[in-house]
Figure 1 (cartoon, rainbow, N blue to C red):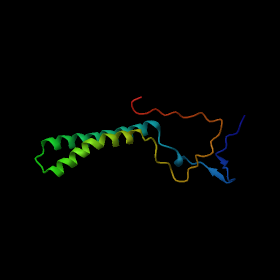
Figure 2 (figure 1 turned 45 degrees about the horizontal axis):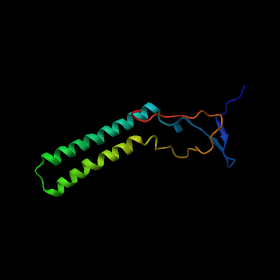
Figure 3 (figure 1 turned 135 degrees about the horizontal axis):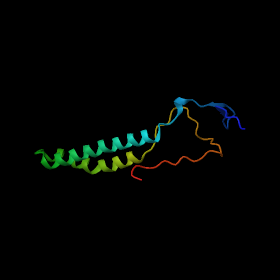
Figure 4 (figure 1 turned 90 degrees about the vertical axis):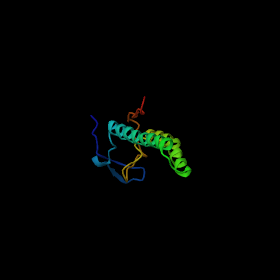
Length: 110
């Protein structure tokens, strides 16, 4: 039986200790965070679109609202597809074991 060690040696010869606080957020938490962000951005887009049509304002303000309504869908999709971009400081992901099973993560909507 193989003994599981909570540490390993990195390629530089230093000992790397993994802690619970270094763990990534769960997949369901990550998806919830991305869905919430997407819905907020698309709600702001809808408000910009309604205000651009209904608000009696000068053309620079209407142009700004239209630009928000046009650019926000792009930003919302980019943000929704960006998974786990924040890694804890000092995490060493370069040396992976050949015995690890690849972790496939589903995208939103798939």
